[in-house]
Image (tube, rainbow, N blue to C red; front, side, top):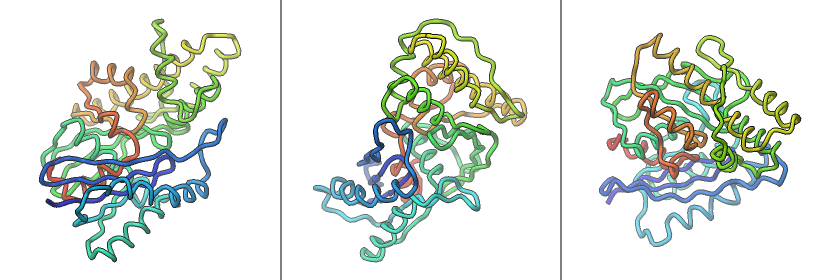
Length: 310
């Protein structure tokens, strides 16, 4: 049995995973970083501190009863696969991976956080791409709202940025609106629950700049509705429908410029059931399963194994 270990220490979750090449199964252990009530995120220094505390706990749980050691270690070392992409929190995972590799005498493979999300979405959705094949992948999370053109190659893929939000990210917008409504952080699942209780038709006109979108105006709309006494259910639905309309406009623009292609969604925001239903209906999009939507050592472990299952 060959095992690949994946580590991902993002700004929101301490994530660990083992991928078994023989069975094709993934085992995960992950834990959200603690955020004080009323806060909408973490400073990098706090994120680093909490990862240092939580990573040993996650590793202990991951290897409990395993009885095997990994033959390779994968780790996310930066947010995106581009020069200059950096966040201090990823240094916790990188340091742990390099220490383990030195002790075990196994290689370390380094990837970006975004690549891990795309790989996890491919694995859990059953979407497969042949070497040289291209597809559109969305990474929607608290820190990222991007559409990238992915080209599959033998041991992974390349990702070219095509579009994104020029201001607020989708996850930031959701958390801000959820916070305004008195919901816990992170707010995605709580806002979705409210939105599902609203069956009114919401008409949205996305703010676009070429293929890119702007989402800060949606926060202003939601604040105005809140001040006017609109229901929390209605405001939640307005927020999510505006995000969906922006992603729809970006996708249509990409199809017009580059031609139609398969569409894959990754990241925590993409676990939203309202978005999933609409994107599946419009574009036949594929989505990561909820357990593989959040920050995502699973995809890192799969890539480290060679990515043959993708």
